[in-house]
Length: 169
Image 1 (cartoon, rainbow, N blue to C red):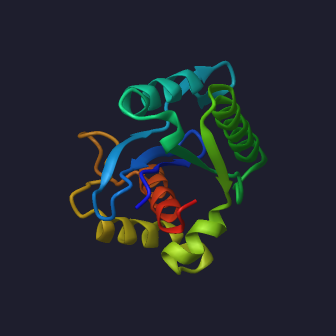
Image 2: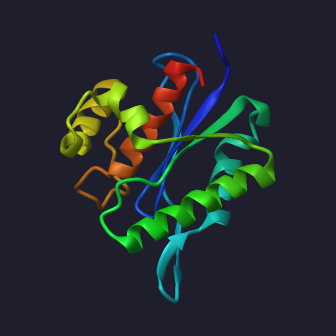
């Protein structure tokens, strides 16, 4: 059995991070919505807050070589502005991993969604929530106690982690 901890990253300012225990059925170690910061043109991911979260939740108690971060590549953006934002987020996350010496892999949305969800192109969000609820029924997928709607970034990040665990990436 591998002792690898997989951290799935749903890229973008409305994304999320989720770390999955290496043991089958053991559950999610930690997760958070993507930390963001205001800029003069809107929001961008706060890469220092991402690193702080990973360091606090994972790196203190584990060997760095036992952690793999899987970053979802940008794809299927609804606008040029969204595509630019996702590309910037992707490259910032990749650079953070490279500079800190964290093993990381890139994955396309299609690569993990097809085997995990088996859903048509426009039906991935509901299918992802259904799959996540079946895998982790104890999770509510809310970004905060005040939220009423499950956060798709948390759901996708957890499923990206599960895909990597199943495939032993």
